[in-house]
Length: 258
Image (cartoon, rainbow, N blue to C red; front, side, top):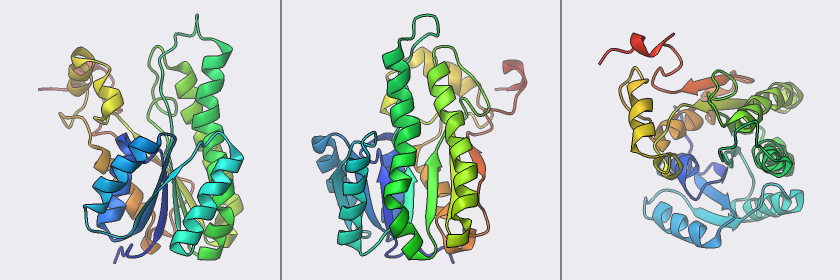
């Protein structure tokens, strides 16, 4: 059961953070994994680390998900290297802080371009490969912020993450006749480089708000993505699943007991 040996997997934003955690889970499961990111240096370092895990083949392809031509190049490179595309983890995303009162059109556009359009362009570019697979899987990295919760300074980010779910639901309907499923993982507070930059006070406060008593790990998102990529998960589509240690459950901070 749950065999991912030799599956061809694309992970955008795969050089660090949640994307790298997703890639590592697939690599350990024996899949052939292509990670995409904008930085060539970060890609090289990530590929070396993933290769060391001893799983399937690992490939890094420099990609800008806001550019349809770059996404098409990614899809072509993966298909040539691995013989097709079975799984697309559309994970690339950014979360810069910008209060609504001072947010600029450029700040809004950047978040929507990467977090929303980047998902659409990635899936479009890989669609022929996913159809040819006969069991294609699309897993979007959304967030609890936007679809479920909100946080000051991230209205543009929350809007982008909610938009991903609108895309997911219609894409799931359109692609179902091809045997393709489309689902989303909604991470809570996952300890990544970006979260570390928020500072110790932020991290401590968020940890106190999580019933599980700890921040998540990037691999926690990878484990769900890997399950959704299996043949056995083929009857699950159009679903948004939170991986947050119960963070969205308490109705107030007082409900979380030490």
